[in-house]
Image 1 (cartoon, rainbow, N blue to C red):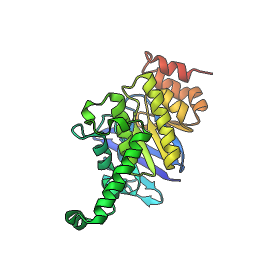
Image 2 (image 1 turned 60 degrees about the horizontal axis):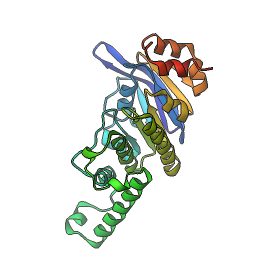
Image 3 (image 1 turned 180 degrees about the vertical axis):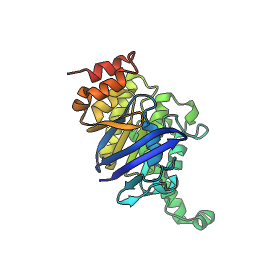
Image 4 (image 1 turned 90 degrees about the horizontal axis):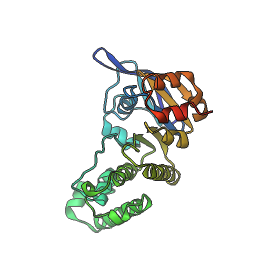
Length: 266
């Protein structure tokens, strides 16, 4: 397994946001994490990526290493990259500069060489710039390489956030509601891009998403959370028919026509 959690728990005062979650995610898998609002999905991501510290007794193992409560930068260097539900890009920087920031931890020269501006440094900078331009081209943003990120559309910024995560050359890519705010056409484009990136870079992908089409059409296995607990896990066909999942969604969000369409489908 590439990623495993055991008894992973996070409490905020008297509120248990994540309650003894066990996960086992295979290398190369596309895993979906779904659940009603407030079910603990983003908190789980924050525990895995080191943003939050887990309660005693929980454990996170990535690629054979115990990363429980490790600093986020150490976890990132081991090969875990993530996006956030609220976009965290540098609006004053260009698209290319955002990708270069994502890649900076992989630069092959030290501080002294950078200060001296050696031939090796110049060659490395050219290589990295070309590599990031190729990544921008792959995600369809090459024509916007020099555009400030703040001037890009929401769909372009979502793709840019995805590209910056890929620029870190991760083994595990964690996407927190990557389709939020996108039109149906851009949702389809995002799905195509995620799967293409997975194939090209050999990624393992974990997706939190409220738009069920995203997880139902891309994920091999779906884990369902409710009130911080794992209530179901399995392939999309089984999840759509699981009475606990239907109750968790429809008991709280009866106005969500998309949930009814997917979870009551035969």
